[in-house]
Amino acid sequence: MASMTSTKTHQNNDDSTSATLPFIILFFSSMIGHELALESLSTTYQFFPHLATSITLFQFGFCVLLPLLLSLLCTDGDAVKSFPRSFKQIWIYVKLSAIVYGATACATTSLTYEGVTYVTKVVFKSAKLIPTMIVGVVMDSLSERSGKIVIKKRKYGVWEYGSAILLCLGAAGFCMSPKHFEGEDVSDGPLTEEDKDGSTKAQMNLEGHWIGIALLTFSVFCDALVPNLQQKLMHGTTDRRIDLVPSLVAKNSEDEEMEMKGLVSEERRRQAQSIQVSNGAGISSQALMVNTNSIGFTLLLLSTIFRRSFIPVVSFITTHPHFLLLHLTVGLGLGTAVLAYTELIRRSGPAVAVTVATRKYYFQVPFLCP
Image 1: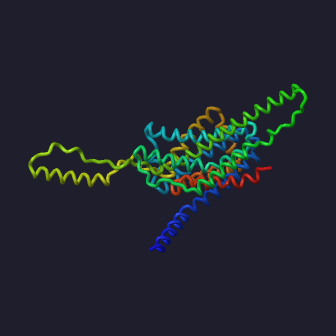
Image 2: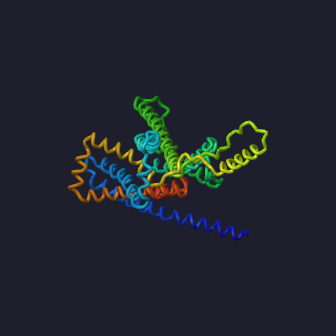
Image 3: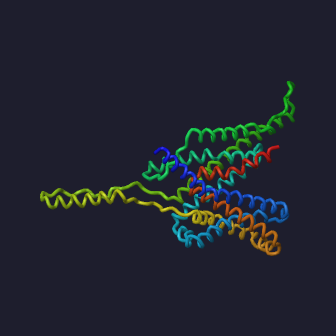
């Protein structure tokens, strides 16, 4: 019996691995193509004043068009059918888009402060697994308290938390000792005006350093919240079973009526055991991408037109085929990678998806460190 159980467990693990491995390979291969094309654009066409705008347009555009096309071809337009049509439905994705934007904006803004380098940002981003795990457990607990059914409650062991804590401690130790804050020894003599100015400047730089760290910390929290919210939207939520049996009216003395009421009550009680009230059946990964990224793409397109950058971008693309080809590679690579990442969240959960996504940082840090 034990051997049969062990064999079944190994078979389930193999099935899970075979189901997620293609998406992991697709994610890494797409990100490699995206990064190579992005590097080529940044070096070859750095003279183009609207380069950042054109790249962002293609990135957002493919994150909408690619899943929409796949939905029309493979799932009979599931993304179109589940597109939000009321303000309440749209507001859900507005909040999700705001969290995604907050994570990116805070991480980018942190680089403007002294002591926060790109390496610091990479190390912080690579340590977002722990917040993702904690946020997931907290969200499951809150769902249970509010009366929702958690189909697969997340629970992590000591080893998972221990390894992630060590990762976070390494990131904290890296950022709490910036080498360029080490000043020269001050002599025992009286301080000159230059010494006072240098001391004041170092103190201001140190304060700026901690502001940057605070922004990075908030960015990591947003990054941990996003995949958990995405999983919730894709899986949907379900209320606990409710009792549909109404309160019985006053008992009648006649046995026949009592027997009839008893039969009806028993039938309703049996039906109540299988009836659930659903708050959402969940959506596909393609629909989630379309609903979320269409908001950002619309705002970006309007902003580009308002700032009069749209026509110069289109004119430059039509006259430079190589420029267009690199943009298509950037957009297709990022759109495919995000789609694979979203599907990993749906199939294996946020922790697995974040672990896969942060693997790229472990390859970047050794090359970025001096």
